[in-house]
Length: 440
Ligand code: ASP
Image (cartoon, rainbow, N blue to C red; front, side, top):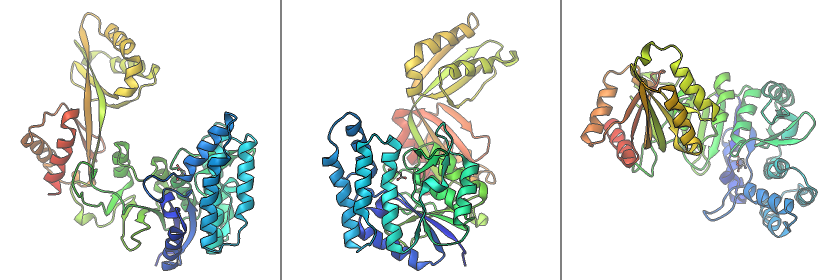
């Protein structure tokens, strides 16, 4: 039996009173679910607005001296309707008045945005009869706006050590001087992970509106299989390539603390979802590949220079040049007298001519520089690849049968992934070919 579970519920899981009811019954199913981190109410239907977006819009209106009350009414109605439907006692009207006043009184953008989670936390704490812990008390930011990880751990674990069931609103915290700071969008996932680490939870459950991760993008592969278990490292590779359900920064605190994250679906509470852990269980039955993810829109800078292999420091000069323009590179396969640097086209575009002409100077007289745009990068990820011979062979024969020209190959140094570069026009066909080869 699990001893302590931290739950985080996303915006769609708290969008209205009906969703609140589902949350309570999920908590009642498992009494060791003792901590809850809420997002702000999200969309109730596809064309609806998230409360956080409405708050940002109110802030923008107020800061340009325009009337925001007509928009704030929509926020007000959402919280009031939940409170009324669930017969809550908390004085949410007073709290809403204070938020509205704050917007008019030049409160910071982060303060305004954070009120979505704050108000939602007040409601859910009242509904559950749990303690409300304001995140400004437990989540600490440095003056430069980055998280003060150590202090946060100290503060949160201190507050929560009495074991009382508690609600800690997601997405924000405060600097030492009390000024509210938010994470980037989707940041309640990070708060959930910080709370899980602070109470040394057995599991961090992240409840959302999907049943976990899929092996491939459903817009490309019809009905892709679900991923039941994945390691943090694999997930990092996949989410870097665009598979997103969880905020990227939410993995670090729990990964380091050895706490598994379980992605669950509020609308299907009995579905086991995806379990993310340091070492996935059932290693005996591990599938060869865990997932496929990719992106269009990369450029390959191809640099050729005679005797490159014997010139010490040449690669550094190429990378230092990119660094000067703030362009990070994604991959860098090298040959004896050539190297390819794969970068996001949108990062290269503003400096393209300058970068290329300066690189040409680096190889002057004994080489050349060329750029190929419209490249897609596809990562096939799987911890099973290390133990299985022939994975690469299968992957490339599948691509060749589909008549796809491989433009670049890179096997991640972790042996967790095989990266291929193809023309953008071959992107979808490549994902499908690899998926059907390994999954059927
Ligand atoms: N409410 C915030 C957002 O919409 C944070 C979150 O939901 O995690 O980004």
